[in-house]
Length: 309
Image 1 (cartoon, rainbow, N blue to C red):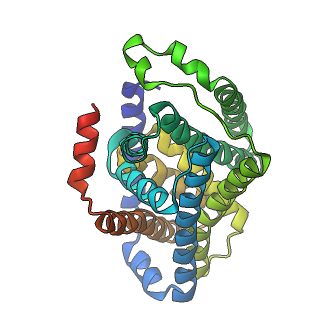
Image 2 (cartoon, rainbow, N blue to C red; image 1 turned 90 degrees about the vertical axis):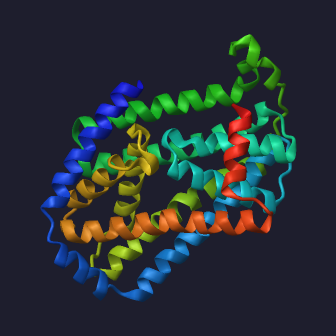
């Protein structure tokens, strides 16, 4: 999708979101936050912490799939820094930073570094696409299901081609960039591949745990699988935003989908705000602690990105 269309979609979603928020009773939102069940909120935060830990583990496993062992310590640093920069920068520049850090800190060839990042994202989008299709089939129905189904099929085809012909990328790149691309050796151990897939399922299952527990803390008995479907569609909507953290597209999708399943606008906003806060705050906290432990700063990360350009 071209930047111009992304800008138009982002602006449209943002304007509708502002209108939606202007209709809310904010005293009700505040009251629901104060009266929420703190035990359920704590369980939701714990679910997100487990999500982060498994993301780090999966990153390490994908590195092993590309025949490059990565320690849990390095995996934690690179994954958390990448996620944090992806949140605060447009166009998710943190994903590129991950590849750069893999190359600079661990001397992993850029081809494999990019492969690790791309496979990580493809696995996420593949799971999200499946979840979005199931939710759409049972809740939204109509043309939305068809569109998501077409997107999912195209994604699966691309994923298979990408893995099967990854080494052919070099022949398709401009000559001046070919020095960065070397042949890669894949570790096709079925147990390793199964572990990566299982951890991907766990990541998004636990990610949905946070909004589900927040809903329970508000006394909203919404089925877990419904929350998982909403998380899948809303996260995919981030791809169409030019703003950091998918601002606008994710938020409006979130609120509208909760409305379709009978959740009040005020309760939906509370779920969104709590989810947004911890989903942004915790990766930043992990990243800052890990950078401090390794003697790095945010400026160091910025300089690494500048030198690579």
